[in-house]
Amino acid sequence: MSKNFELLIRMVKELGVFQPLGAPPSPALGKRPEPEVDARTREELTKLVQRVFLSPRLAEVPRAVLFSAVDQGDGSSRICARVGEALAGQTPGSVCIVDANLRSPTLHEQFALENGIGLKEAVMQFGPVRRFAQRYCGTNLWLVTCGSQSPDPHTILASDRLGSRIRELCAEFDHVLIDSPPLSLYADAFVLGQLTDGIILVVEANSTRREVAQKAKENLEAASLRILGSVLNNRTFPIPETIYWKL
Image (spheres, rainbow, N blue to C red):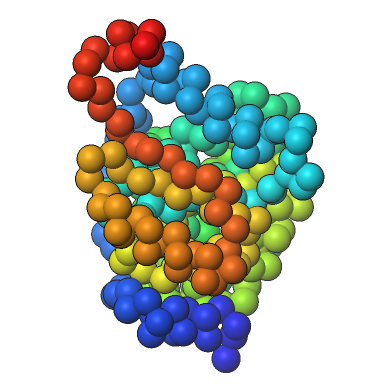
């Protein structure tokens, strides 16, 4: 029995999170739906990238970082994609985004890429790990989509090859950003978190309940997982934003 499988079962029992089997339906491909980010969002993304990945004060720069929403719909996938783009734009090194949200993968849709081969295939098949990554528009940004092979999430998460593949990605790319399902629903992030250098929590403004976010933080700390920071997604302003930022 693999260590990943044992951890997965233990976290399900301890946290009471739901672990449905079966692969979710693949989203329809289409043009990239995400609008261009505004100046304020770009500034916040730049600050996050500088603080987490590029700060000269960091004793050890995290190479592999997991993004996980506290609750469903908090926007972890969108934030992971935006941070990956921002990081690729600020460093000459290579950046690889990995869609490990095996429950509801969307990153291939956000980047308008095919999802025929990806993380599932990398775990279940052999060959150089770069073969399972797609380069985005000739830039230094790469994407490993979820993939379309049939194994259910348990099979992928319980495989020791998952950790091996992530280590291979870290050897191939300078930065690896991994998207995962919500903490409140699945134990996936606890397995993936053991394979990374830390986690960035994504919280939806005016939606995620404080007690749910606090419980997620406590569970991560209990699992000895390093929290690198948090993102408050879709914050709104009670007064016009242009005035707010002058106050």
